[in-house]
Image (cartoon, rainbow, N blue to C red; front, side):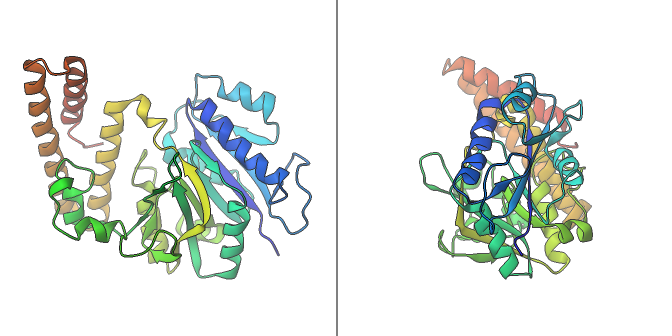
Length: 324
């Protein structure tokens, strides 16, 4: 029996991107790949029924009005506050009914029959608890989305200004570069921009840890999923375009704080307080060094507006202490 799918999208001030995302889902129904719950669109008997839930985090760009006017088949949930990505997804999952939960960023476009392909793979492989499609950049190139669990060494170099001098193999191992982009493979975790999970997994391990406002929440979740005995798989037969970070781009300094604080929290939770403190100090030292460098470039008159913005952002990070 074809399982039902609940697509859960958490959105904040990305109305136009969300429209493209929803249109791509509707195109799948028009092509007969899926049946949209509540729309009367799609008639294929073997196609999975898909409900779409959008949790809107108090957008000010008219997103709720757009959904009510043009997408009556979308179930709109308005918490009345910015719940963040993590709690927003938990709210969406609480309201969902599908056998499979598909957490999808609003800055994505679902290509072709990606949804039924993923559902069929989950049916055929009952040991798989979480499944990630191949993510593509806007130009069609493959976006890195499969991962192994990070180590302390990874934390020092990944997404820091030391990345260019990382020892050979450290980041290759983390990014699973020893497998081909078109190879279906079991991994430790996949990026949460598009992530399918079984409802029984949610019942067994719970949802996202809401101590992670955004970033690293899918890493923590999939670590718990694997610890419960499930497999996590990268599945490139399903393809989704991911534009990346369009909500968080609106608050640059806060994005740095959320990203790095979540990294510290992850290491403290899974590797202990000493490891968490070490990662926090390494990251703060990185920001301090970059602040000094940007300030020096500002003083000599090089792109002063950009340098001033960076100094201000990095100073906010340092003031936060990355303590959450």
